Structure formats: C-alpha cells, structure tokens
Length: 466
Image (cartoon, helix red, strand yellow):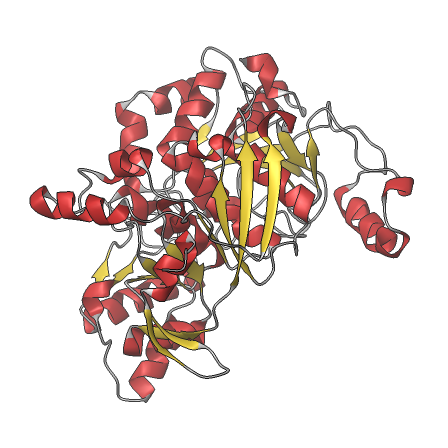
C-alpha cells in the first residue's frame, strides 16, 4: 500500500464521491454553528422547504457577538440580541443542540468543542468561522466555511471541497523557558508570511510540537489560517488521548478502547510525501510580538522593526502605511513601548491553561495604573474552573478585570472595543486595522508577554517574570 500522510488518511476516509476535474463530495462528522454566519443559511434552507439533514451532528453556541458583562440581563445591543434570538429559534425549529447564553456549556465554539469531548481524532469538522482549524490539534481535518457552505452542510451533511495540497512544518528541539506555543506559531508565520501556506493543509511535527500540551497544540493549529493555510493538524498521541478521556461527550468503556485503537493509526506513514516541507529549530524562538497590521509582521521581543534596507522596495509603501497606522518607525525596538490595554482571551488563548499561566505570572504583583486589562475566559467551563482554582481571586487582586465568556475584544463585534489610537497587547489571532475597534492598534503576543506588559505598562521581556 502506498504510504499516506495523516491528512490523506482522514481526508480520503470522508470522500463520498470524487468529481472528475472538480471538487469532492466530502462528508462532515461535526458541524459547529454560531450566531453570526448561520442566519442566512437557515433562511436559505427554509426558502427551499428543506430540513436540517442530520441535526444530531450539529452543535450551536453563540459567541461572537455576546456581551461579556451582565449576561443574566436582556441583551441591550439590538443586533446582538436579534442574532441570538434568531439562532435560538433556528435551533429549536431544527432540533439542534444549543448551548445558549448562560448555559453551563456556553462559550467560544472552538473552546467548547474540545473541552466537552465533541472534538475527536480522525473527525472532519467545519464551522462558519475561519479559526475552525483549532480542532486540527486532535488529528482532525477541520476548516472554516462560508455561509452558503453552512447551508450546504445543514442540508446534506456534506460539502463540495477540492483537496488541498500538503505541507509539513517540523519544529525540532526544545523551546526556551518563557517561550510558549503562541510564540512558536507567531515565529513560523513571521518566517512564512501571511500567504506562505495558501492552498495547503499543514501538519505540524517535531519534538517541540509533540512536547506541547493539547491547549498549546490548539493555539498552533488555530493560527494556521493566519499564514493562508486551509487548516493545520497534529497527529494524536498519548497527550491527546489523556486529554479526551473522561470528557462529557468522549466515548466511554469498550467504545473508548476501540476508539483509541483506531486513533493510534492516525499518523503519517514512513515514506509519505508532502508538497512542501519546512524545518525550524525551537531554540531559535524567543517570546514573539507583532508590530504591524498582519500576523506575519512579528519579531522576537528583543528585536527591532526591520529597517528600510531589509524590505523589498516593492513592499515598502504598504510596510510604511502599516507602521504609520501603528505609530511606529522603521528600525524601532519594541521593548519599552507604551501599552494601554491588555486582552487575554479568544479561541487562541482563552483556555484554562492560559489563565493559569497569566495568574502565576502576576501573583502578588499589581497591574500598572495606565493599563486596562480584560481577562475573558473562553467558556463557562473555563470560568468555573478559574473560580474553583482561585485564579479569579489572584487576577482580581492584581487589578485585572474578569469578564464573562465570549469572543469579546478579539474582533470587537460587541461592546469590548479598544479605543482609537490606543495600544493593545492581545492574545488573540489577528491584528488587522480596526480589528479590536476602529483605530485600535493591536500587538499579538502570548499570555505570558501580555502579563508582563500589564504589570509594567510597557512591552517587557516576560522571561524577567519567571
């Protein structure tokens, strides 16, 4: 038999029909739905007189546009209220499981799926959200889809999809102390650029990747999309099985034993080929920070923004435009730059492990008076755990503001907006112009780097805090 990559194994097992010279009819095991990209899809279905084909394979939770304060009160913002009412009505009408606002399982869709055991190795998952690639950390093929495709999956449990090319990114060696999964992914994106993986599905491998916790692996796969990839995945191993075992919707008893035996085969065969391969050395990575208006504009915390001589002449005008927006200059060093806001949360870094890292870094310290710090757990489960573990107490004593779960200031669809001209060190995934609010200036970083900035009020090497 011809050796196969992990991606081939999962992809090929879900192809219902190949269309000559065209896409494949591709079966979807789990369809995740939120309030922003689903209303038109449900309306389209209704207009055709169709029902949801397999409601038991669909799971819904509002997250993008929900308020992160006073969730027990009626939603004040009209659009948000309407979107959540519409999602609730659509789920009721179609027998879809909904973790609505205030449900103990509510939260960001890409946090909820894994922590409840809905996400499992070898699955195919889609959602009307680009960061669906998060679930690839389990050895699943997971990717974001558009609203018309949401309708297609609701109607047929399948999607028309061309098979992407395959890329292998290997990170060998050991990460330095204070260097996290977020730094690893920002480093790779800085090396490859925001279009470096366009058209590819990426498998991450190497000792630095296999040493990561599941939460770290989710962070890496989450940001695959930021270098243009269709998705990212990591082969399941004992770390994966330990994480999934015992979770609410994971297989139990003999089903569990059978599942693990199957999952152990989900790895790239010896001799399988990729269309493109990159190798990086873990010890080259230091805490990372972005300085521009896309996630590829990143440097090590001790580094300088590139000078004119380091930039391709054709790229210089857009590069300068980005720096003008950020209020930075060519050649600037990042250490010591002023910070106004710190945001820890999102589907990239809003998990319990992220809050533990943050709390341990700031314990016994105080937030700088000049910084507004929002800590937004990724789900009700994370919020509950953070309270039980005493993390909330530690963070509030340090002057951090704990919010309720939601996407929050990652994309500023709700009230959590960074004001124009202000600098935000954010653990989220995108730093586009206006992403965190009109005129907001976003510097992407790890929870550890965010903690250091919150306490000192300026960009600080987080390794000084360890």
